[in-house]
Length: 333
Image 1 (cartoon, rainbow, N blue to C red):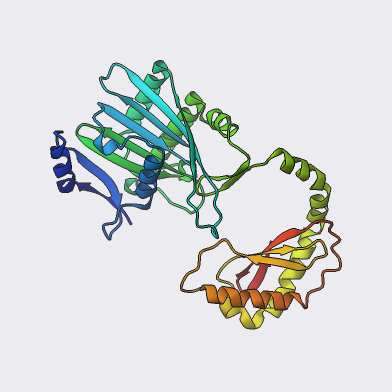
Image 2: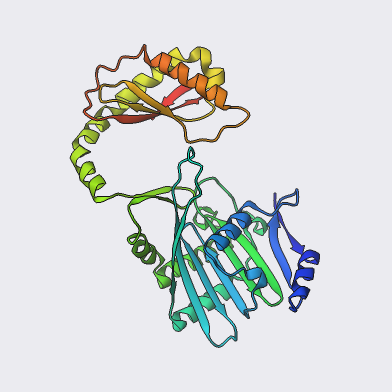
């Protein structure tokens, strides 16, 4: 469980040093005193995108919204003129086996003052809603989307998170208010359209928002995809039969090794002649599944496939299969 604490003493020293008034800071923390996961993610993206740190903002009021593709800043310095800045962003996708730092791509678009004022008052209306952990009945999950809110004025700073308002029970009144606000942002600022316009300017390649990979194919890849579409369609027709055969057979052949084997997902590249060509994983190694175990498991898989005969699949292209251990069975997909 997390709760809100006021980080005051440490920040007072910093604020006095800059000649500002005392500012109370509210950030969710874990029981061990560590700042919450989402706050760290938020701050990293703030740095990556070269956005202002709102802990030191002198604006009369500054509100920031962030999801997986956008950051929206709405602020005023005098309560007369209002500004809204939309930042669309994505990261280059780097597979786990490459020790390379992802590159961030972004573009900023400023909205007109009239629309900025409208969004500003939307933001002020929800500013009193607490973070999700302080809302009775608010549930969390693994999938879905988490919206991150940040607000700052001369006397206080708040960081709040809201996991998938649409998934909350209808009695959670705050969830509907937050979702309506997000929908209004997307509609008024045309966030979907702005991201698509931004993404269209990027070079072909793979990009990620942290939870999913988006691939922009090159003209050559598009041409190849069209050429091989009939072959993929054929593989779809035999997919269920092939998956069941491999699942049943591998469950039997790997039974003696199951204690060491399935702590991760393995991806198998099969040739057009249905021979195992390559084995890989995208997951990190840990104490339960070391690199040594991984190498041994690859040997076990290759040994098992020497006894597997796939004579009912007539593919003209190579294809991939994923395997993992679940409830004492090998699942194939």
